[in-house]
Each structure stands twice: as C-alpha cells, then as structure tokens.
Amino acid sequence: MQLNTVLFSVMTVTTTPQTLDELDSPLLSAVHRASGHVGPDGPVGRWEGIDGNEDWADEIRRLKKARNAVILAHNYELPEIQDIADHTGDSLALSRIAAETDADVIVFCGVHFMAETAKILSPDKTVLIPDAEAGCSLADSLTETELAEWKAEHPDALVVSYINTTAAVKGLTDVCCTSSNAVDVVAGLPADKEILFGPDQFLGAHVRRQTGRDNIHVWAGECHVHAGISGPELARRAEENPDADLFIHPECGCANSAIYLAGEGVIDPERVHMLSTGEMLTSAKTASDAGRGKVLVATEVGMLHQLRGVAPDVDFAPVNERASCPYMKMITPAALLRCLALGADEVDVAPDVAEKARQAVERMIAVGNPGGGE
Ligand code: SF4
Image (tube, rainbow, N blue to C red; front, top):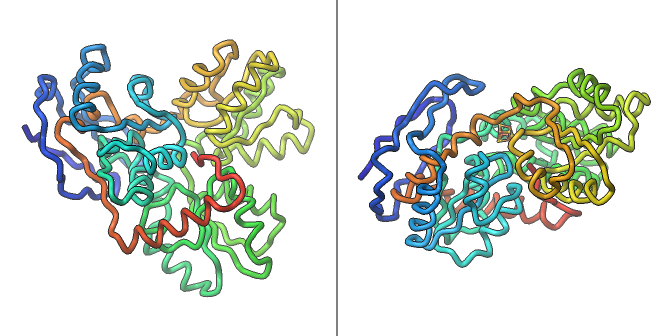
C-alpha cells in the first residue's frame, strides 16, 4: 500500500525515491496525514492514526526484524519513540552508532540534518527518516546560498559550522563543531585567520567570549525552541528555586544571561552548568550521586525523559515547559510504522557533497571532545 504524502511548505528538505520494497502491515490502513500543528513558519503536517501502545510496539519490532533495521532516536523525541528505539542519544553519538552498525537499514528518529549526517558517515547504508518534513529552524537559518555569499565577502576566512546544518552547508564548511568542542575548534585555528561561525548566534557569542578572539563573524541564526528559553525566565526560575542546579544548553537564548547572572553574583556560578545533551546525562548521574534535589533544565523538554530515566531520585524541571520542538514531535508512532512498512522516507546525499561534508565532520571529531552536539 502506498500512502500519499502531503507536503507542507515549512521546510526545504527533499527525499530520494525509495529503494526498499514495501511490507504489509495490518496497522498501516489507519495511518493518515493530519495538519493543524503549528510550527514556527506555519502549519506542520504529521502522520497520525496510531497510538504508541503494545500492539504498535510488537508490530514495530516485527517490521524492524524483517528489514534488519536499527532504530535510533534523538533525546528530544516523544517518550514512546525513545522507548522503542535500539539506541537513544544526541545527534553525533547516534551517527557514530549508525556508522558501526551491522544493520542494513538505519531508521533515524530525529530531524532531517541528523539523518543526513548519518548518511554522510555511512554512505553505503540505507538511511530512513520517518518524516522527511521534520526539518530544523536552526539548520534552515543558514542556507547553502547564504553561506556561499558570506564566504565571497570574506574570501580568506575559515568556516566553522555547528553540526545543526544541512549537508550542503557542511560541504562548504572547513570544520564542523558541536556545542562541546566549539571553543576548542575555534581556539585551534590560526589566530590571524578570520572565522565565519554559524548558524547559531548564541553559541557563536559563547565561543567569541571564551576564546577572546575579535575576528569571529557570527551568523544571526537561532533555533526558535532554544531562543524561546529567555534570560528573564531563567532568572525568575532560578530565584524561585535557590537550591537547584541549572543545566543549560549553549544554544539557549538564556545562555548568555546565565553567564552574566553568574558573573554578577545573581546566580552562584557553581550552580550553572553549560552542557550538551550528552553531557547532561553524565551530569545527571553526578547530581544523583551528590544527592542534589532539584535541577532546572534549559533545553528542549524531550530531554527530561532521558534525565529522569538515569537519575529518578533527582527532580528535573524545565526552565520553559513550552520549549517543545514541533519537528522532533513529527516522528510519531504512526510515522515510524509507516516508515518501516513502506521503506520511506529515504535520505540521500550527493556523493561529492557528502565527501566534502565528511571531511568537515571528521576534522571536528579530531578536535578536543566533540561530545554529541544537540
Ligand atoms: S530543537 Fe531547535 S535546533 Fe533542535 S531540531 Fe528543533 S528546531 Fe532544530
């Protein structure tokens, strides 16, 4: 059975024609495309019609085995998607697992640039994403054309791009970075070289401050979810919870404020931890071992499911409970069922683009501790 794909014009991603045979599933007839969810740029479509219950989980496991597939889920996915996945983690950790797996098919439950990164590192594997329209407002805030024009204005500059970028942008990049190693990556480049840093302005500001370099040009991009976690909100929540630690992702709009407030003595600097999502999990265990009671978390709310799993005795609370990524939440139980049954949506990256992008990613992995990015 082939379901019609209704494309909503929110993202600029494209899929390749599927190469896998379709498999029958008794649940497939219930899957339909629904609209009405609101993204930053307008309505967002979503595959719906199936609950993430035990019947669904059994069918996912049956289809996965039939395809010899591995399911990878990002930390921001819905809890039922995280729970059915073979591996859950941040984008780079999942891409590395993808590169090492014996599975024939990689099902990447995340957003499109993450599935592209898995394909870049595993060019011989079939990579599927349950909904190719699951884009990323941060990745979309710097296009290939914009980066090419920016480079033309600064022909001698080196380009450092955060991992949240499209394959085409990575292909124009000298070295990628994650939030964990962005400072090390930039600090390791020749001091007299201009740097073009993109697309995230908050991470760029963090890097500029930490390195003390004044020859970094920062692209004014942002993630609408992380930017929505504001400094005033963080200050209010920190004041309400004077004993809580703060886990803050450097992409957050509140990241600069947290450093400022700590510097001003408004928040005890010991309470502020700037962490990638992977580092948050490690720090959650440390907080548990140290008997910490409460942690305020400034990142996408899906992260709380993982944190509560590794440290159930700690009270994790969001700085902003509305910080939910509509694109991550497009990977629904129905979307995953459709993906495994139909062998869609397949992700491909042109070999010449993939080769250049792979070099930028591998240079990143060679520098410092890349952690896992988002
Ligand atoms: S939370 Fe922001 S950066 Fe992450 S995938 Fe969603 S839009 Fe992109």
